Length: 193
Image 1 (cartoon, helix red, strand yellow):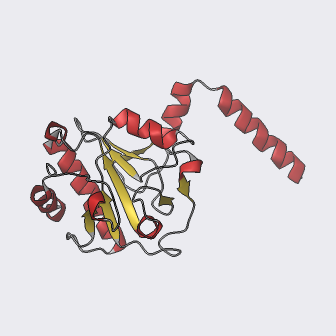
Image 2: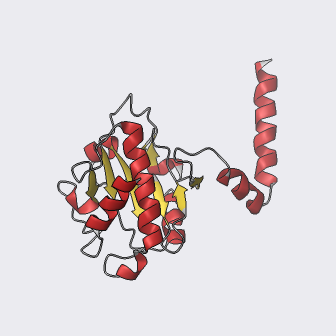
């Protein structure tokens, strides 16, 4: 009986691999996400640590990043097993599209410090720290909605103690989200949700 199940599972896996990439992408995009407005774009399993958060590691922070890349390049980096990096979400500049790349229960490798990775949810934003044109109203609004949703799920206050920039992670050599990130505007939007 068990051998039959193994063979059936192998057949299903082999059949799925024969499907065109566009069909596989649609199937992946319809997978359930932690945030209702996100679509699933999974990172390589080599780029995060499976966990059972919050029972295995309490979540007490949201870390805001700017990718220094386009949206497509950022998702591609997270899907490349050689890169050894990921974040839970990526927000696109122009339309605020949200991709979830790592389940919130798992530990994404985004903060540069293991202790901050284990206790935070990371949100990357398309763009560059020195190009404020990427920080559109739509991006701020969608990211704020995502951030507020995360805070509500984990019982986090919607304040700058619990919503931090990558540059605020102790020991970080990163500058993102940078001087052009409008924290006052962003936090106002987070608290309006």
